[in-house]
Amino acid sequence: MTDTNAALRDRDLQVFWHPCTQMKDHESLPLIPIRQARGVWLEDYDGKRYLDAISSWWVNLFGHGHPHIDGRIREQLGRLAHVITAGFTHEPAVTLAERLVQRAPPGLTRVFYAENGSSAVEIALKMSFHAWRNQGCTRKQQFVSLTNAYHGETLGALAVGGVALYRETYGPLLMPCLQAPTPDCYLRPEGVDWETHSRELLAPMAALLAARSDEICAVIVEPLIQCAAGMRMYHPIYLRGLRDLCDRHGVHLIADEIAVGFGRTGTFFACEQAGITPDFLCVGKGLTGGYLPLAAVLTREAIYQGFYDEYATLKAFLHSHSYTGNALGCAAALATLDLFDASPVLASNGRLAEHLAQALAPLRDHPHVGEVRQTGLVAAVEMTPNGDRHSAYPWQERRGLRVYRHALERGVLLRPLGNVVYFMPPYVITTDEIDLIVAVAREGIDRATAD
Image 1 (cartoon, one colour):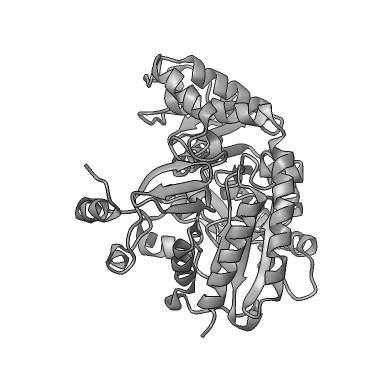
Image 2 (cartoon, rainbow, N blue to C red):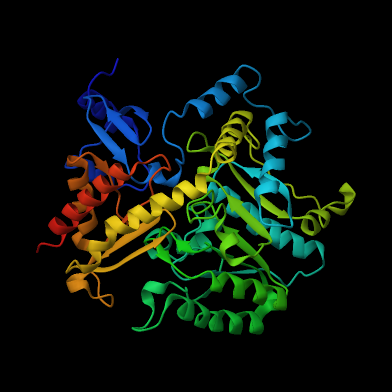
């Protein structure tokens, strides 16, 4: 029976290989065993609490241990935990698909379930390629993504990514893909606003599509925020222009909203801010409120009908996962959607976002901050030498790790992306708790940039 942090740490290090971690770090950076969690707070075995300012890797929307989500999962557990969904169906999966279609941008009518975000991206890529093949467009075999993109860790998703830290090692295993420059507004020239910069970055994408559209299945983007790249952000005008370009050149548009969907950016889906409908919409993470692994790909009726034929034509989409449409995951997702329906979540998030912006404003004048940026309830502070946006601290110095360590000492979970300290809290955070996480981040940034 584990009853202390030390006891569980010792057991862990004998067997558990942790994600996105150099395990040798834990010789000097102790793991933090969590015994229970409520709301925005995590609690370890020694009773110390940590404010979860990053929603446990961006998945938690309404806090840990939410009574409504807990109750819906328990209720479903008493009826059905899981059943094969090839040839079978169940009410939670059907109802969730109906409700996702109701919430989605107009024109998305079909839902294909996956088990996680990377799998959803794989499905969208395969479905786009296969849809063109079913139409006889066999030359279309390429995908276009943005530089600094991140779409997951499985090989197809990694291939359309652009973050070298995750991608380079596995380069020999990855399919070739095309890339266009990111509209990331951190990189804009001095004196240029977000909208102008984002619009101008449509030009290289336009040139690429004009030259090679007969080879290209789809363009895949993270709408508004490139999260793993350091919460780099851009203006919705880029999405609007990209939709027009894809239509003009006969190319699908895949919107990867796995991290930014379900209210993170200020609208339910980030695409709404551009007034567009993608051909494929990938969702995950917050879909179940942070409870269970579940993802989905939404697509258009015309694409679905392109696969609908006699079996002998071999047009069927024969992609499958063992836990496709898992009933417990669907119950958690339905409970999460209930919470959006029961109260003005987006309006509340807007007020929290305003408070977060006010709390962060003084950091704009910090001598070693290059930018403070925000979209909805996602904000980031970029640490740079002397506040220069055109330079960066060497990654080997691991200054973000210094912020992480300090925050843990102060009872806050921040997990910087390199030199970027970011905030993506659950929607139940209070204004006082926002003030706490920003104050702790300021202390950490002071310490991390002191030399």
